Image 1 (tube, rainbow, N blue to C red):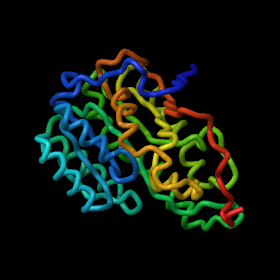
Image 2 (cartoon, rainbow, N blue to C red):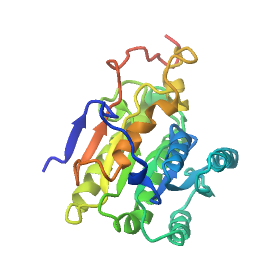
Image 3 (cartoon, rainbow, N blue to C red):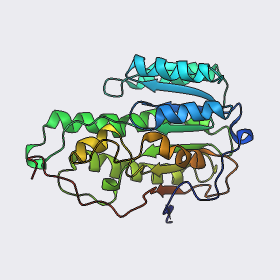
Image 4 (cartoon, helix red, strand yellow):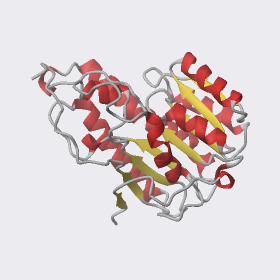
Length: 273
């Protein structure tokens, strides 16, 4: 069975998030400083949702917490968690702590901005290979496994893995990042198939496209500051996937490609050529 649906652009033109779809629902956002996570947390709070936020940086967590509280949102549950060093026990402990907030989790978003090495496989440091796979792939697996019981409590819950075009169209010098993102695409399909009898949660992979973050800056060093849109520009793409009121695939892994132009060929070799 083919459980992959191509979605050319998110959010769709007619999508408008409604507060009643998110109010009081609980969302877990991992590594919020990696991309759009902090902006997504603020937007979810503005829609009345409750959030659980993780990131290696205590400063990013506290800054996001301050912004949410200042805007009148529900105070998030914060957990300093570095996917590079986190253990299975750490993810299980987080899931147990969240269970005290309520038995059901409406959505989980995994992002990771760990850049590591970018260059030829021939000179790829093994320790960087292991670190990239651990932060991008292993952490996503462990996080989802820990929260799957809570995600299974709601009929329209969703898991969103942030990936990239390299996971589907690998190119030279993408290294472990391309391998990890390709594996996330596969992981989402496997999980969707295994949960098909329940119809919950839905599993998605989201390619944020041309958005300014650490990973894009490392892969495209020729981009000028401000040339790519900020993370806030793609928040509604995540919201549409998380929105329980949006009719859509129950057990499909969707690849969302919020690009306004064809993939750029501007990537440079590590030597700058």
